[in-house]
Image 1: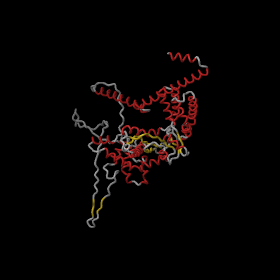
Image 2: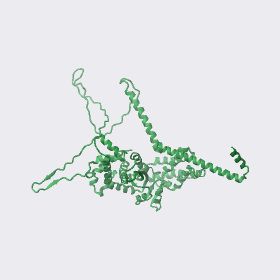
Image 3: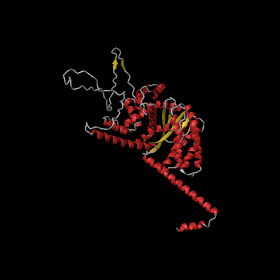
Image 4: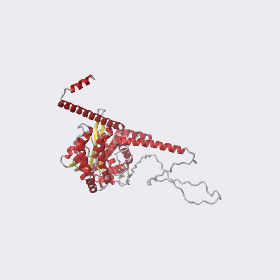
Amino acid sequence: MADTLIAVADLKLLDREALEALLIAEREKRIHSDSEIGHLKLVIAKLQRMIFGTKSEKVTHEIEQLELKLEELESHESERIAARPASHPTSRAKSTRRTLPEHLPREVHTHLPAEEACPDCGGALHKLGEDVSEILERVPATYKVIRHVRVKMACTRCDVIVQAPAPSRPIERGIAGPALLAHVLVSKFSDHLPLYRQSEIFAREGIELDRSTLADWVGHASHLLAPLVEATRRHVLAASKIHADDTPIPVLAPGTGKTKTARLWTYVRDDRPAGLDTPPAVWFAYTPDRKGEHPRQHLSSFTGTLQADGYAGFHHLYEGGKIHEAACWAHVRRKFYDIQVATNSVIATEAVDRIGALYEIEREIRGKPSAIRCEARQARARPLVSQLHDWLNTMLTRLSRKSDTAMAIRYALARWRALSRYLDDGSIEIDNSAAERALRAVALGRKNYLFCGSDAGGQAAAAIYSLIGTAKLNGIDPERYLQHVLESIADLPITRIHEMLPWNFATPQINLA
């Protein structure tokens, strides 16, 4: 209290200019303190989302919990109804049964009545009709050994011996058939089952396949499929617009027992939102680090528009004019959304709403031809973007430069030209979601694998991710596709490798949406 009284008494001795300077200094301290508090709240909120589920993963987690609760309630209700006497009336509405798939094989069990004659008069019985019902049953996975017997034939006159050539195998002198090998690959890279878990599953079914054997199969398959991955890469980079992103992947460092952080890069070609029927595809590339020289090497032959985030390693790609940058509105929105969740900021909330209006327009024109999309964007989105630009500049003057909201605004304004590029080109998307979707499989697998064993393992993962991801983009079951490829790729001339691309897969397509 004494210090406060002295401080108040000292203020009386100051002139007007000194008082104004003191007030300005105190105001700056308060602004800095408020900014630091807001920043800490934002960091804490982000860390909490990292613990309990980040971004959409948190929503996914909540949905999973609600679905689990719903399953338990429905199971309990069914148990309660099943416990009632058969004659007990029930008010539960009769469920609508889904038609069982027509492609499944049918096994007919015909049930004849016990009576061979009329129970009343003993007369002959004649078929009047029939009631048919179906149930879905599971046949456990079965394995078989295919024994190839090559008969030797000899000429008794001239000692000539003839024999059929040995049939090719996916892995030379290997015991894995195409279907089994495809199952191992899809289980690891699509269903996220590490090889040691697959080994345990095989053991339960009476088949001893240790983890090292399965790992050997993965490596051989990656080598065998390399020409097909290269064909996929060429198809992706032949586009006039691609999406790019990267994600960290832990890799065991040789001789240290520790892991290093490598990267998986994804490049996606998908023109379906612009009404084109060009087959979509994704190409993954592995690198031991995140140096900017890697995307420069990956995209050395590419000319067109690159949709990507603000990673500094991409910036040098735009210098020569061969590649044009299209920035991602989702990244801009995410920065404001994080602030909105953490602080309930009015400015952040309005920014999210304004960006949401742009996405509403995109939802309406998705899948329409490029010219129609461009026309709609010019007429409806461009005025909103212009108004948003002016509003952000105005808000920036009212905020402390060190505040998180001001940083989010400067992030957007620094990329405004690249953010606005989609307005003038109907083939460009509003964001880079196509690349982020492609990386989800890697993120899910990373939680199960913990790390890759080596750089070679990372390269194998990139190869298989490329083919599985491309198959899914084309609505094809990746396991059936890989089985088809592994059955014949060893005997296919390299000049015909394009025939093995997923969109040329001859069997019926399956909707994986």
